Image 1 (cartoon, rainbow, N blue to C red):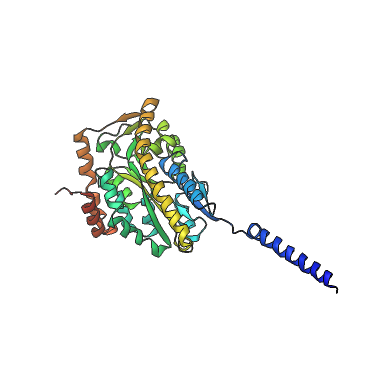
Image 2: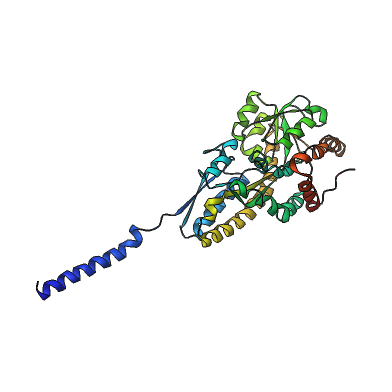
Length: 341
């Protein structure tokens, strides 16, 4: 082999190596980390908008290393299915209401369903943003679930096709609830018949009379149009709705440390965004419901609310053996709640 031939081969080898080196980052680029974020409400709710905000921030700040696919309106899983899907790794992130953790086996979370336990949003956030909230999240980890943030969606109101002013008005009504023993006890204390039902099935059930009424927050009543098939709405503020943004723990622990830091920062901002939006949208959507003329909106008198409280406060004691008295006491202290003697 001549010297010139050897040089030619060497040069071609060098060029080929250089071409591979240039192509390698494109050819062998690492695929983005995909996070499937599933939830059961509409995209234009506080939860839906919070999920979308998280997606935007996570993808932007990770420089494309993370891709968040948001699935609203039970597109992937209904209420009862989504938690198992998360544990199995079929989805990576959820934002279920806090009532969903009782069926998972972490009954302490049902403390959030106790009637009239939070006098305002500040009381709720004093619980979730403090030691009590952190301690409750730790209880999820043996289930393969990691809690990342609490999203506040305001106070529950009641609706039905008859006025709900006095406790006697509830007698015999079939009222839709989430799967929660506390909410079950609450409705029974009012004389109603609780009906556990997936949120995605609620409108049709109300329209057809399968259930007579429900509780929820104005933003969900408005976006799901349940107010269109409920003649009466009562501003009772008897309960509180909140969500926990959770991830599959194995998936989370397996992420690169810098990606976790990016996601935590994105979620912190998305949480503030979702909370602010919840406050605004619940006010706005209640006014839209009022303006529609399709439902009569009623604010109970102080005497009527006192009657509701008298009927519902025994639920706190009734549920102590299930939720845990120590958990209830911790929430009382953090929320500044003083039970009636």
